[in-house]
Amino acid sequence: MFSHRAAFWQSPDSTAPWANPDHVMRTHPPDVDSDRMPANEKATARTEPPGYEIRVRGPVGPTVMQAFPCLTATQSDQDTVLTGSLPDQSALYGVIHQLEALGLQLLEIRRLPTADPPTTRPPT
Image 1: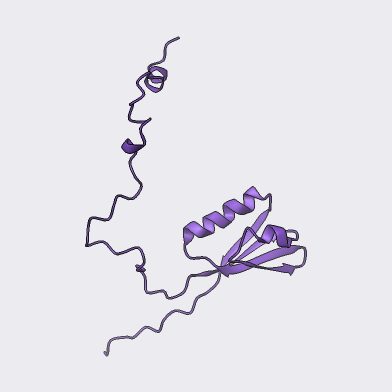
Image 2 (image 1 turned 60 degrees about the horizontal axis):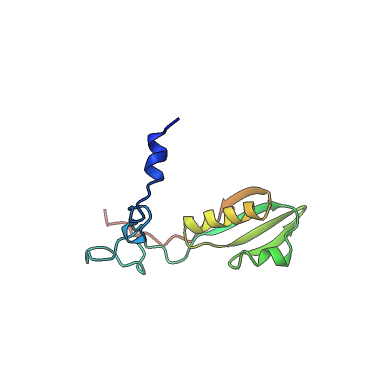
């Protein structure tokens, strides 16, 4: 049975757009717009990244901890609590993915409170 979709992907043309890396759409185009915020500036006023406590089942040895250089491990009963600051949500998802890849059972993720800068109220 002939499938139109199969014919599309099995094109004999070697210059097909999906085969040429020059035709791949980039995730972030070159920075040509000067109105955009540079990557090294933060969009929020937060001065330090948020801290997290990540609880996993069982002990975590020093070899496995090498996968988490920005976290420290402490034993809590039968579990291990990984504590540290992560720069953004993407880093948190990376830690979660690494835990899964290493076969560790994730029990809890807790975001630690941060010291908010004092807010000034306008005079009333």
